[in-house]
Image: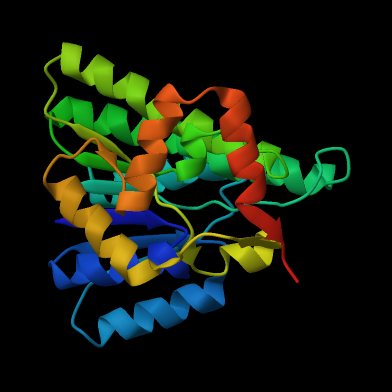
Amino acid sequence: MRAVVTGASSGIGRDMARYLSKLGYDLILVARDQEKLEKVKEELHKKGQNVDIYPVDLAEEESCITFHKTVQETYGTVDILINNAGFGLFGDFVQTDLDFEMNMVKTNVMAVHILTKLFLQDMQKVNQGRILNVGSVAGFLPGPLMATYYATKNYIYRLTESIQYELHKQKSKVVLSVLCPGPVGTNFNQVAKVKFNLKERSSEEIAKYAIDKLLKNKKVIVPGLDIKLARFFSKIVPDRILMIFSYLAQDKKR
């Protein structure tokens, strides 16, 4: 059994790699930070797992395509792909840095789109496999002060949901799921320069919960009663009210 995890050098991605290794999966880990990847590889090697690392900048289209080609030629069709790489940014839309935002859009959207398509095509040929796209509760909501980030997670949620239906109509055995957590205790807040006024969950808790649900073929994975309620209310509450909730739920990092 073999799994690919992007954004695997820290946070949820690293903890998903740890949990998958406990379940017996050989791992292909991807991130920009080679030094951190090496540390994760060393840790998991000590536990007897086969781990290969690829320091790749997934914000580059050609890098995504080349990475998939390398995986397919080296390992064949993998059993699991986890699209976890991504980050956010807090601030008024007119004031946030354009280059930073475009890099975020490429990482959060373009990379997930490309890798989902290419790995899904492989899995369809053998009619098996699982893909987990890491979204967010942000995917259910409008997001003032984090407009671009919320929009990217809306994209991931709707893309995954739509492909799920296509697979259902094709009677495919490939499983495509989306993880929609609330705030998680990772370095996300430091990068995004934001502080959420909501309870944070540990990345270890989220990683285990997500993979357990993925292996049970759960399509939309929502950890925590509070986030499940947020998803429920997003379906019945007017957007202008949700907008206020989103605005008040986050504050500039001090």
